[in-house]
Amino acid sequence: MVSQAGSSFPPQESAAHLARLSAPLGVFTVLGNHDWWHDGPGTMAAFQQVGIQVLEDFAVPIQSGTCQFWLAGFSDFMEGAHDVPLALSQIPEDATILAFTHNPDIFPETPSRVALTVAGHTHGGQVYIPLIGRPVVPSRYGERFAIGHIIEDGRHLFVTPGIGTSILPVRFLVPPEVSVLLLHST
Image 1 (cartoon, rainbow, N blue to C red):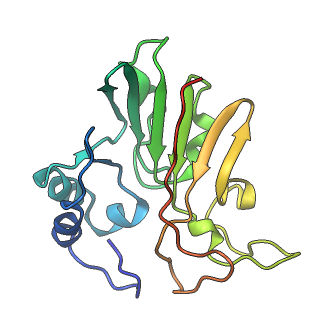
Image 2: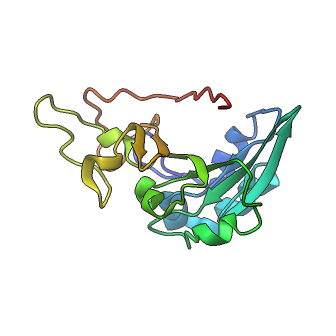
């Protein structure tokens, strides 16, 4: 993992901090490009040691009362295997699927049977200049998947700007954000 100031620290340290997360249905993750650049296998092991389930091209059923769905994790588009069909292979055709991944560039490969895909990676471009846009978005699609709720062909993607920065520790008109999504059944 990389800190706000750009210095890296061992995956065990980030896992120790994230171990404090508590969620009634579990805590899950996928790895991002920096995790893979630093030590992908070590990062996975560190998360698993503290009880955080790593869903790299894998899915798990989730149930709370009468609400049931599958949570699928897609590997990082740049550094992981990102095998969407593999991640969805064990899920029944009629099941509701929520997916998450680090990089939103995988969204064009995501089938319509996935109700919502959640991603990060872009940091919202970190800089937004009125009338000009976002000068740098780390995506092969430019601003298309930079930030927020995107709907294409009836498929939904939400890209969080996150709380950190990458390369330069600068944000302008793209404040850090912990995104909270409230989902409702249709």
